[in-house]
Image 1 (cartoon, one colour):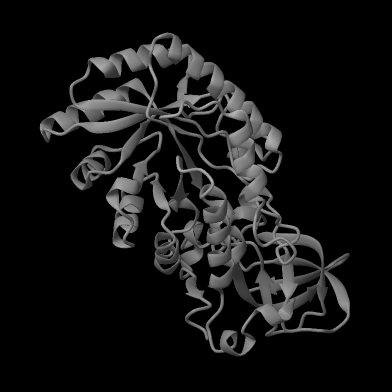
Image 2 (image 1 turned 60 degrees about the vertical axis):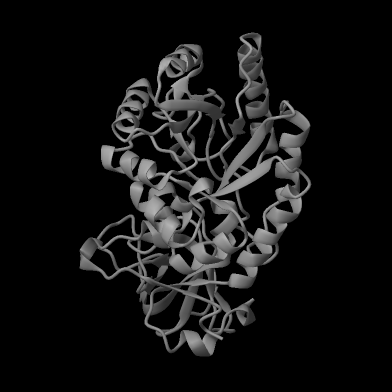
Length: 386
């Protein structure tokens, strides 16, 4: 679908760059709001780690979502973008002292705590400031997810969270502390999940843990089930908006909340993944012994997911209508893993053609690096290029 891109504007820009279709983003946010509006106790926090482009953050903030942060830098980016501090939560397995102090100074909504030592440090730092920090415990539910091994987070073998058998002990410890307030439980089982049965399994585990707490007359203020909903990388034009209805209905039907409890979500990829594309320029076509290479000016420094996760991104030649040929699409980085795709059918590629790597709005620009002393790609929105 070549007409979805403003090609005249693209030709004026230096490649590679990221392009964010704000209509897709706003339509996605509207779909989230439509589904969550059915439940007054559902609250969505955008996972800033997916994409922290300031213009993208501003649009998300305008929609009313909160912010889920995993670093002090993300907290600053969220505040700068205008997210209310009472809608900012801070997760992460390795929070440094300055990051915790930053959260305390801003008065953020909640710290999602992943270990006893972290709990002790938060209590100590809050005491020094004469403050009380709201905390939720991230419990590792030992629930697997049908996704790539590198992006599962809910197994006992992962580094994240507190084990289920230790849950009561750490809660007891927190209840004895004067400068933390135990308010919730936090879970996250992975990313790019399309099988709703994974979320059903999480609901069942949360229900079990809630029963354990209820037997002790403990009812937490909120349950945070993380995010993890995937997108359709194969068909970004056909399915630009994820199946939010099935996602939220899964929790409505399977999670047993008490009337006074709030349910929090941390969606990242599902919010921004489909709105973004990496736009690159073809430098050379090289005929190998058994294959033809299309060498782009974008590489793994600009979009690392294919090299890191063997991730698939739909690749399109958006300036050619010629007959289709097969290419290995590669970048200029001095690494054999700098490959975007092998045996890819593209309209005949010529030097100077613009190549789009689709569904790159999440974990694209934010993970870019300066390896090989390369400049970071710039991100543009469709609002800017009208």
